[in-house]
Length: 174
Image (cartoon, rainbow, N blue to C red):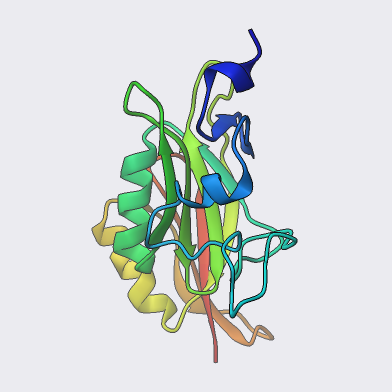
């Protein structure tokens, strides 16, 4: 039996979304109400030809971590991240989630046997690098480099490591 015959909902395979057995309009109804869907009609014009959701960048980092909910909570605490989409597995782990930090979307999911954890290095521009760094440290992140401005660098930067081993540099252009 083909997967499309058994499933009437979006299916996430690995790090990308595959939609089986549903039309775009049916899928749009499964997106949480907080997410604006590019699959719905906008101002009377059918937007099904959009190649990405509105307000998304073309490139998004994808974190695979042990403890995706803890990771989302950490991003909320440090960066005031907003959850846009989320798809849970039957066991309660997060298959796929998308969170927004300022104007950027980060995608993530819980690790599995097929997709083990991967660490990344991220740089995020923030209004106040010192304040953001302090939020990270207070949230339990490890200090890698405290805030400072290097000679010739127009940015004030700091670096910390999260519980999953990812390195985050935050910077504010002065």
